[in-house]
Length: 212
Length: 188
Image 1 (cartoon, rainbow over the protein chains, first blue to last red):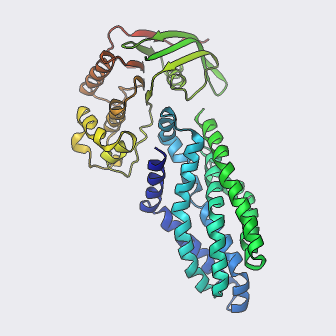
Image 2: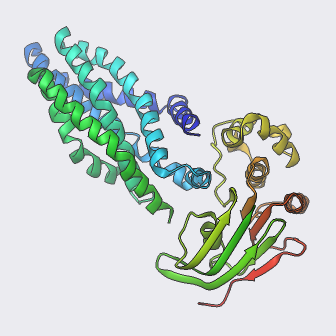
Image 3: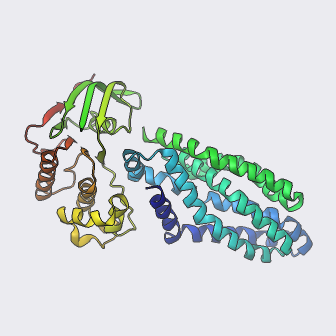
């Protein structure tokens, strides 16, 4: 059931336009900065890595409202529960599916964003490595947040308030890796791993509470 | 062995007591009909029986796999009906079950274009295609025409004859010969 759930959610994100929306939003945000900062290529190259990380964080937040809430409303989570699938396992499956739906397209779009921001290749490689390490943590955080706000009125706005502060460590170490090097990447990996390991249980408990 | 037993179970939602002291014992081939007006706790009782909610008091014993029908059909609206049902029961089981509910010709249609009654029948097809020995059906006749209700009654009778258990919560007339009647209504 879990592999089928991962495939279903990932497929829904790609065919339903969710993945395209994330990439479009990410590119739009990164495009705004050159307009705001001006044509100072040296400055753009210096802040570009951080801009990409902030845009990635916002893009990961975009589909949060749709990760858990619709399945709770549609009775999908009830059907999984009566089949003996734990809600923590369901949340873990949703994290994998969300990562598949947003991280690979985002990492491809980062190449385009890097060109727009005139990032050096070495910086681009560090940003890509950071995204590969940090996006599982972002996906975990997104699903946990989606589970916490499922069924609430104004869930989208609340999700931003819940998720953004919790994602600050990922942002600090992800953007910090551009100048901090491997040590920052190791710290980023630690935070990402902690989120990926702990979030399914938080999300599972939140889903159970939402089903009551 | 299949069994579903309630021992002095009480149900509540949102801190509000709905029913108390509900007891019954269903063995293979048995059925129970839960009736009562809206808001009295029929759906809550079904969810407690499914293990999705904890009873406020008492004990529930469930031996066997559960198939659950609720108001939510849990079928992806953008997928074809056969695929959406196949996600739950496998494609090889989905089509015969859809045929049994008169939806065979709709297998290639997106779920979103189905009527309320057709979605209800598709959700019942999921119950039919499952291996579960305990059927928990919350308002199975909602949105169904008379002919479809008779089909559902026949399916329930067949399930019981095969040694299964059926617990049906409804406020509409549905025929189940020899079913235990559980009338909810009085405040606990």
